[in-house]
Figure 1 (tube, rainbow, N blue to C red):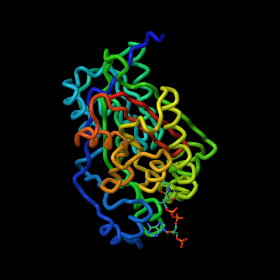
Figure 2 (cartoon, rainbow, N blue to C red):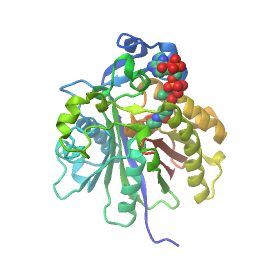
Figure 3 (cartoon, protein in one colour):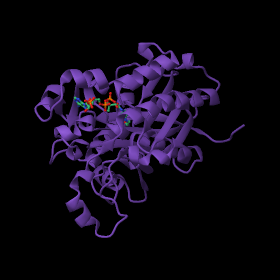
Length: 336
Ligand code: UT7
């Protein structure tokens, strides 16, 4: 029998910018329609950050404050930070140290930055879980935060990508639990770099001489590129696979799940996964309609809302699952 302790999510919180951008607003910027966006993605509106107010780090800090409050803790209690984002405030240093500064967390606390895009939060949760399990740390903050809207091609040229992504942040606090059979039961992480260029922001890359001049000459490569159909094709296979992997490892069936929190990639992907797992509507959480795809922030925002709405109760079996750029995919099974 394992002597390792389990960690549990002791608090969860989220923050989204106050600026709501509807599909109708988007049609003012590019050739698209509310019908196209809703039919292909389920998205009705998303949030875009406010310059001078929102940063990737301070949105993460706002979410973290709520998670700490729910856990009955303060920033002084935090012993490690894991910050997942694909849209950091700086090329370096990462946003983890900026969040540390923002929250006034002590300087003996490490801050990791995780760059696994849509799977970043679940990857980060898995990392944090290992540190709590081994007893190295008791209180770990895991944050996912993104500002996409400042880096999207908002012309018709970029419409296949830019209508999907939104800004926001979510956070959890992990703590050890002494409740038998409760907490994070297992996490499962995967990667397949052969598809690295299928969903990518190429620049600013470092693998050429004179990269600053290169960017000035090739500024379109600063925008995200996605082979949407191929990403979709892999997502609908990997989501069910990684959810089943988590269930099987713990001796459960899909019908044992009380709440599935999938990365909010596309409502059509979530519906496909729901059908494949034969889960009823009330056991699958979706808020992409209101926030779009917020990559590393989407799972903790959805988890925070589901908890806030009373849709996750103590003792529930909760599954988190994500898939995205890399490709990377991941799941976590939690007895709440
Ligand atoms: O979170 C990380 C993982 N990301 C995902 O999981 C995203 C996976 N992929 C998708 O969700 C879908 O592929 C999209 C929603 C991105 C795109 O939907 P699609 O059904 O695959 O559309 P498409 O890219 O094949 O484009 C179909 C048509 C094209 O026109 P033609 O060539 O058929 O005339 C596009 O030019 O739709 C056109 N189109 C648009 N039309 C209106 C593309 N974007 C738009 C738009 N508005 N915003």
